[in-house]
Each structure stands twice: as structure tokens, then as C-alpha cells.
Length: 120
Image (tube, rainbow, N blue to C red; front, side):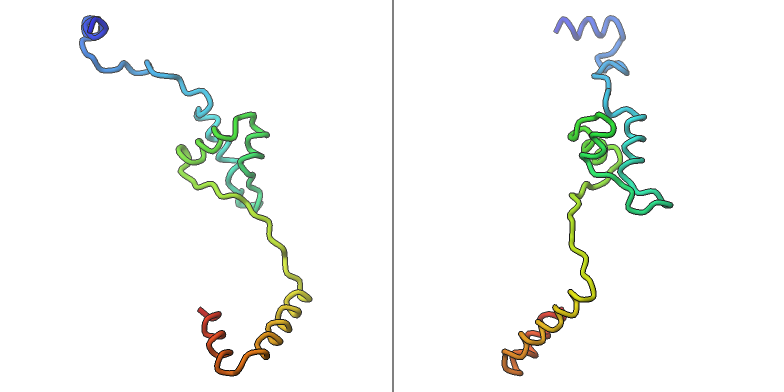
């Protein structure tokens, strides 16, 4: 109660004074701009964006702080990049041949049912 009375005497109100809270150290405007440059691909360089861990290593900011900047300040969603194999023409031909062999094992009325399921 004494604090409230002192506050009213000094400022005339019990509202918080601007700048009285905890100072933002990591999520400053400069850091947000730096993370924004690294997290999004540049127009002239597609696929040049970095992952959370790469941004963390490059900037020296913790991974959780980088995630918080991306989510709250930039209002973006963080996805984990997954590697996928690239199919060659030989892979596609082999898949087509195997699927045709597989379809030959089933009666014709089942094959039509399977085709309808896969086309959805």
C-alpha cells in the first residue's frame, strides 16, 4: 500500500510510467531486421533462406529467441525443412512398371476400384 501512495504522490497516478519495464535486449529492432533478412529468401536468390539453427549460429542468438522473433515479431510460421529424394527418369519408369505388374495381380473389377481411390 505504501508503494501505491508513493507512486500517486510522485506521478499523480498509479499507472506504470513508460520505459519502467524490462528492457528488450535480444528482440530489438536491429535483431528483428537481421533475422528477417536471413529467414526469407531474396527475390534474386530463391531458396536462400536459412533454418532456425543456421540463423542462431550466424547471429549468436539462442535458437528459442530466433524462433520467438520469427513467430511474434515477424508473424511467420516456422517449418522444419525435410530432405526429399529427387526422382530420375529411370526411377519413374521403374515405378510405372511395378505399378502395372501390381495391377495385373488383381481382378479387373478391383482394379477399377483401386484406380478410383488413387485418383482422388
